[in-house]
Amino acid sequence: MGASYRLGPELEIPGYGCEDHFFELDTIRHSWQTLHDILADKDLTKDILCDIGMPVHHNNTLYNCRVLCLDQKILLIRPKMHLAGGNNYREGRWFAAWRQKELIPYKLEQ
Image: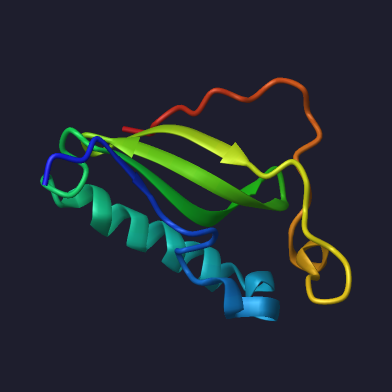
């Protein structure tokens, strides 16, 4: 319909309600499988920047991330820097906040 940017909700893959299932590696693996299915469809990300929320493991740490994709490619993975806490939110139970000043370049494995 002519859009150039598509923004999905936080943790749209696999869903925010996973709670302690975030501790299970299968939840993360299935999230990557879902992203793979999205990228495998050449029309879903053609000429539209897709901003997708999903959990990502990096150096044995789990992050709540935004994954930006365009034309079947991952352009950027951006971990959340500030986590929701307090009465209704326990994001810190499952995820770590990104503390590094620089981002690590993402290299797509061939």
